[in-house]
Every structure is written in C-alpha cells, then in structure tokens.
Image (cartoon, rainbow, N blue to C red; front, top):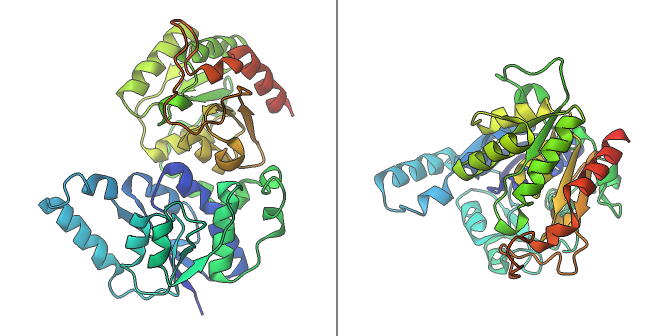
Length: 359
C-alpha cells in the first residue's frame, strides 16, 4: 500500500534543498512512498526534480501577505485549498517549524507531525500538531530534517547520517536524489569544451554575509590568470550591477537573468563554484558541484553547504559567528566591511580553493 505524505517546507531556497536528503531517505526506507510538497512559488521547481515527489503545491505567502484581501490573493488561495480538498494523507509533515507552516499543515487532512516546542524555531507552532518530535539543536540542518522524517515516518536513520560530520564527507549527489535529466530539461548551450567554468555566487540576503566586492574583483583576476572562465549570475538590479563591476575589474562573463532552472543548469555545467552563504550554494551542493563557501557571521557547521565535495572556509575573527544580519562594528573608512572578512582575503581563498579542487 502506497504511503502518501504532505510535506510542508516552503522556504528559503537553502531550507528547501536541505529537505531533499530526508525525502531520499524515506523513499529508500519505505518503497512506494509519495510526497506532495507545499513550497513557496519561487522555489517550486526544486521539489519537482525529485522522483519521490508527486505533486508540487505552490503557495505565495510572501506575496499574499502584502495584499491579503485582494481579489487575486483570494483566488490563488482558493486554488490552493481546492488542491488539498479530497486528499487524505497518511502523514502531514511540517518540516519548517514555524507558525505559518504549522497553519498550512492544519489545512490538510491527516495526522499532523512536526517538531516539539524545544526543537522548533517558533515553539508555539508545536501546539498545532497532533504528533510532536524532539530533534536536538546543535547539528547541521540536513541532519535535523533527516531525524524528523525518520521519527515521523517510523524508519531508522541511515548509518551515514549519524556521524560527527553529519555524513557530509561521505555524501554524494545520490543523497539529494535529484533526477539530473529533470534539472537539465530544456537547458541550452551547455559547454562541451573550452576553459573550465568557475561560478561566483556573490549574492546573498544578509548584508553581513557579503564578501567584499573588491575581494571578488581580485579573485576574478587571479582566476582568469589561472585559466578559468568566471561566470557571474545575478538575481536583482543590485547583484547585476555588482556582477558588471566584477567583470569589468577582474574579468568574467555576466550571465543573462536566468530562472531557477536556468541557474541550476549553469551550475550543473560548472567545474567549480566559490560562494558566500547563499541558497544557490546549497543548490550547487545538491548537484554535486565542487564548491568553496565563505563564512563570516554564520556557522558553517549548522547551515553550510552539505555534501562530499563541499568545502567551507570560515573566518577566525573573534566576533564570528555572530549570527547578525547587519554588522554592529564600524571600521574606519576604507577598511574591509564587514571586518570579519578581513581574515579571508582573496589570496587565501584562492590558495584553499586550489588545494581543494586538486584533491
């Protein structure tokens, strides 16, 4: 008998990708299990790349809350509710642990599972579940989601997920379970020859997580001199302008604006990436692309890109990781900002990158 699960994991991009290894675990432990996945519209393509996912149910909570009573909002909500009506699930699993995700779980028919109040990011969410599970903090996000799935669906956590490094050093693309043919469907102009492509994932959400632009420019010069073709994606006007300045100062190719599927195809075609702490870095990990991720205010052991060929370089600044979206320090004019990244200059990053990519 096929088990049907409704998974609530709406955002952000990194969080959605963190859930993929758990879906793979469940599919291996419980043959025939099928997931329907509730996800923010901007990331709806990601679940569709996993063979164990049947339906993807997009929501637009970020957009709807700006105009909650607009006619378009009401109609889109009606369509979402209609997609749930009549569906009976063996398990409704909220892997987000927020009030908004627990509220969405309550709209579905089936026993609701989620984190207990000591484990959830928003403890009040636990009161909306019928079954609550304890998952300790202080572990990588991928492992925490895998533990939640195992507890909720009743199977043993795979041995490779129990190690001190959360299995990252032994993981492979198979752990994420993505169907590469689905990821690359419709992709064009994938390279077959020429200089190896090095993608700079320079965009991120928190101001404090941005590696200094001058460092990116210098790294682009170093990479170009070493025979790499630097590729610069972007997602908004600010990132586009920064990409253009990096290309002008250090060399590189500014990509056209790409949808998520196009960015995934670009990453899949890359020989390597250098990234800040960003969702696209997690997508590179899911595609098994070698990547060096740079960490200042955040903790690489908890949220760093997870996978066999993922390498993390964190600042040794005494103030890190501060977990602050904006830096409270005010260095003198002309100094590196945020100052924690002064410990990660481009020459050091390139040295570590060379060591890792040659391994």
